[in-house]
Image 1: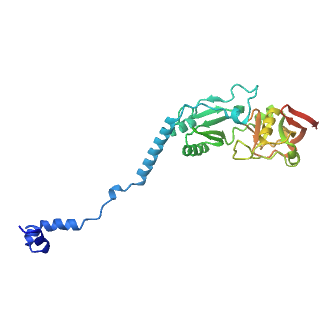
Image 2: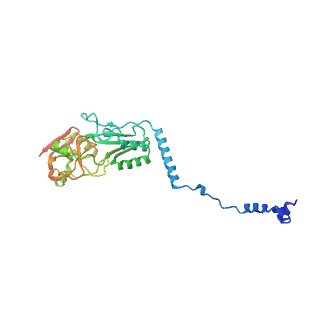
Length: 298
């Protein structure tokens, strides 16, 4: 047996230092020359990453939905835009059975009952209400609804998530129905718009305090509905001096489509200009809480 110092100084016999079969040298070589670590087993493919992401989003949706209190439909039409009117049809805001389109949305995002609803709004136009729990799902739902032909015209958030309302880009075209039912349509406007309408007609516009539209719209009422005009005046912040225009339905060009408005009773809109030769100044007056007080008629 040699001492440790002898071994280190090389005085021991090679076969004693390395082993008679050379195994000691091989073992020492392995210790001194370790191979580079192989991390190939840790490489993650795109498919695995996508799978992990989808699983995370599913668990996130389920966790957020489990934390939600049961939701019920809140009627935007009466809560935000229009006050309750005594003679509105009782079916306003009736919840309808979900169609296949809404069922797909509900299943995809694991929505509870009530988190997406199909509602019959004014004039029989169907709108959708969705209550996504967070910003990510909100954006995804808006994109899916867009693909289905609906745009988000109203968005509100609170501690429980988002309240979204979706309206069809264009409801069914009802020009023939309006021509058969109505001799005239009506349009209230602040007095400062009178000359412009007389020269250029009713121009589609896209300005609204609450609602967002993808295209300009020219709005007309089937009746002389001064109550609706009062609400619009209050929301727009205009003065009391107003004019009432009357539109001759038979003069509206046949290619000018008319559509029922989902957000106002007995109202229609067009995304095209209503030419000036169809529009005549009918009355001028003061629009107050008590109604439209006529100053002058034509």
